[in-house]
Every structure is written in C-alpha cells, then in structure tokens.
Image (cartoon, rainbow over all chains, first blue to last red; front, top):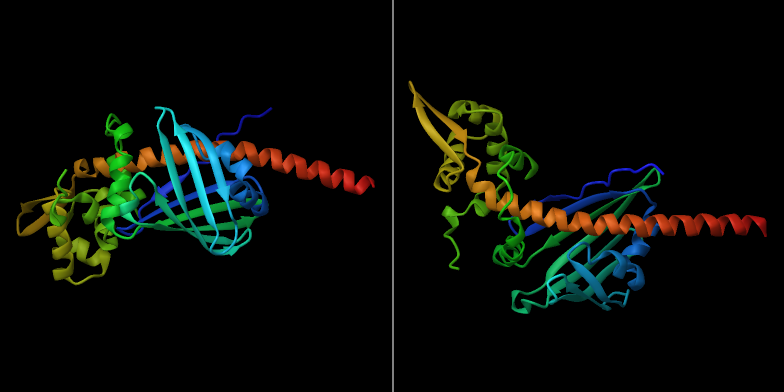
Length: 162
Length: 120
C-alpha cells in the first residue's frame, strides 16, 4: 500500500482574538461532517497524540450541548463543553466552546465549515475568543511543549502569520 | 505572570494586518522607509506609527544610511508565537491524522454498501 504523507494542518492568527485552522481531507464532506459530529467517531481522533478521548457527548441541534473529555498522557483530565448555535449539516456549524480548566475565561465561538471539491474536503475551524487575554490563556497553556523548539526559519513565521 | 504592556508584546504587534505586511516585506531584506511607504500604499505617518510599534517590541531595528532610515526584521521576538503556533499545529495535525484513518473506513463502508445495494 502506498504511504501518502498526511496533509498539514495550517494554523494562522487572523486577528488578535482569533485562531484559524485549515486542513484538507481525502474524503467527501458528508463523511468529514459525520466523523466530526458522531460521538464514537470523535472519540477515535479527538485525543490526537495528547491523550485518549474518553467521553464525547453530542446533542446535534441548535441549543443542544456538547462535551468532550480527554485523559491526557500525564494522567490528568482535559474537558471542553459548549452549545450549538447554528447547524447546516455538512456545510457549517457554529458552537460555543468553554475550557473547563479555566471556565472564568468565558466561551470561544467556533465556526466550522466544510467545503468539498473533487471529492476532497477542506475543513476550516475559526475560533474567536472573547478577548485577546483569553486567547493568551490558550497560548500560554500551549507553550510548555514548544519552548525547546529550535529557532529555525523565523522569517517564514512572519509570512505564515498572514 | 504579569501581562506584558501592549506596546512591548509581539503578539499584539503582529495582530495588526498592516504590521504583518511590513514584516512580510522586511522578510525579503532590509528596506528604507520610503520603499515601505511605496510598497504598502499607505501614508508615511501611518507607516511610521506601525514601525514604531514594531521597534518597541524589537521586531524591527533601524539604522541611518545617508539621509535614509533603513529598517530590518529581527525574528527573535516572534519566537513565542512561533513556538506556540507550531505546538498547536502539531497537536491538531495529530488529531487530523487519526481523523484520516476514520474517514478511510467510512469511505470503504460506504463503497461496500453501495456495491451491495446495486446487487440487490
């Protein structure tokens, strides 16, 4: 079987309170949507390499709640929850997202869009935080693992931050 | 940890699209301020204001060359952003790699299903 290299997730910071993630998948959008909204499927991928997703609850309707729990590799639990505000199946969802480790920070609003072309789907996740301070909490919590990174190609960062 | 003042924080400095544009231009090499004004199509005072913010956080440095002020990029203050974006990107890439596996299965299941539908 041919091994294809994975598509890269591209993360950019379009505004001071936003994070944008874009990734292309070799599958039609109704399947990407299904894998993103079906609890037993979410549990298989959402933990990534940070831990195991032990709970995924999805009440997929406007006003419905969702909650994901991950047991991180360090043994501690990381959980997020929120509410669906808009659902256009396989097109676009808007939901709130609260990190249970810092609920006082308030809710992010996450807009997910699914765009299909020639059987491939581009998934975009736009997270809007209530303020730059809240995004900084996310930034700071994500910093620990990155501090040893080598200082390569910093010029490219300026370009990638477009 | 006390939050850094706005003007001394690279995160704030690059949050402004025009300032990112300036960094993009300077990424190709140092430039006199007049070049930046021309390339960005902005008024000189606006460009100078943005350059001031970038200087305050150490993202650009300036030297005098004859009568010109020449600006250059210094990537060092971008390191926290670089680290964070890479870390975040890596974490999401790992998730999406697993999602790829799930999608392959869904595709296969769907193909098998449509195949057996046709037989019926």
